[in-house]
Amino acid sequence: MNKINPKKLLNSKWTAVNPIKKEKHFLITEIEFEENEVVHCSIEAIITKRIQSIDWKELKNQANWLSGWK
Image 1 (cartoon, rainbow, N blue to C red):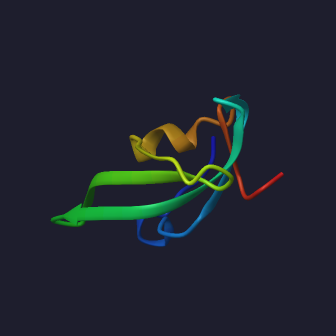
Image 2 (spheres, helix red, strand yellow; image 1 turned 45 degrees about the horizontal axis):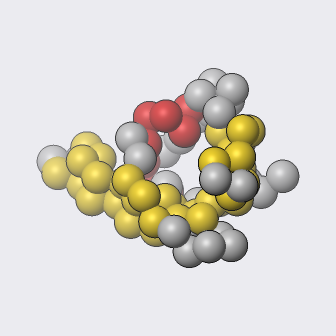
């Protein structure tokens, strides 16, 4: 399980274990907080610049996501 500090999540780099639409490397580009809890998180594919919303807690699952670019 990846340990994640939500306050340091913005601009963090992630690698998809199973590439999504041939996209492997991602960057967290947007985080919204409400009463110190994350209510919205956007992730951007590095190559295509495609942005999608993601539940930030999914990033804790090492079967799907690795911290950094591998």
